[in-house]
Amino acid sequence: MTLPLSVWNTAPTSAPAQRKGRYIPGSAAHPAKMLPAIAAHAIATYTRPGDLVLDPMCGIGTTLVEALHLGRNALGIEYEPKWATLASLNARSAAQESDAGTGTVRCGDARRLTDLAPASARGEVALVVTSPPYGSSVHGQVRSTRDTGERGVVKKNFRYGHDRDNLAHVSTTHLLEAFTEILAQCHTMLRPGGTVVVTTRPWRARGELIDLPSAVLAAGKAAGLAPSERCVALLAGIRDGRLVSRPSFFQMKNVRDARRQGMPLSVIQHEDVLVFTRLPSDTNAPASVARFRSRTCVPRAPRGGHGGC
Ligand SMILES: C[S@@+](CC[C@H](N)C(=O)[O-])C[C@H]1O[C@@H](n2cnc3c(N)ncnc32)[C@H](O)[C@@H]1O
Image 1: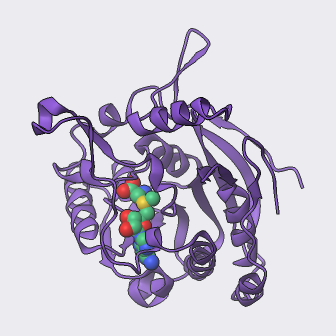
Image 2: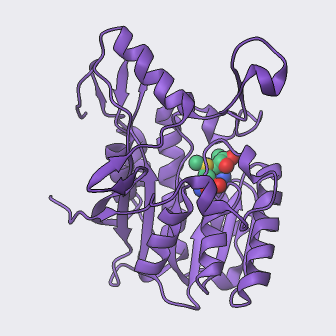
């Protein structure tokens, strides 16, 4: 099935510029924050003021902050207490500034989303915007000798936390099983006709391409959601008709290392955006999660190629 595709111009300015003045100090330490303009674009496109927006893996609360600034209400779940605290503080400050909506953050495992969320939110969510933890090889910030006094470049802030149950630390197969359960819980939280937006990227492990976007598409279907669009959210700016790339230090390093080994890699300039709908007629809880478990397949391709299951 070919899904409608659109390109979202989500990086006209850099991530720090998009965050400036809206996020409290300390937020930068999260290793894999969503670009604020991606959340804002999804919220503006799929909801109206006063609607409820949910992020079941909310990190430092980008989805919540952008929802509140657009006059929506926001609910977030985050597993790691330190990120949940930052999400809560970011949401509180955004709610005060926008004076339009309310933001709620709960700390816990999103596989128990329907228990953790306020009962009043069940069946009321207009939009889920989320991103699973993945591809840690490109996470982190660089500290130079000038910053640290140590020789060479030091990688900082590349971990979500040390809890081995955080889904950032499990195998890709386990991550997909858990993410399917989380999407099934989102299905219960959504109002009929509600939308789910998931951003992901493929990445490489030991030279193999891990096609997470295709696997997430399958996870959404298994959770009872209907795929409705597959979009491209740009991580690069556009100037004079050309892309202006803003890769992280580690993205550049990984690509250079791969090229030295003869792999013709390029820096990824976009996130894949997978859009699903809870069909208005669909009142049943998804029954296919268990079936998905027994046939989970992470699409892989050989070195340098693209492929599927
Ligand atoms: C890609 S990050 C999301 C970042 C977020 N969009 C932001 O901009 O800050 C994924 C988050 O999922 C959290 N996480 C991992 N396992 C989880 C679980 N079982 N339930 C809820 N959150 C989880 C991680 O701690 C991490 O903060």
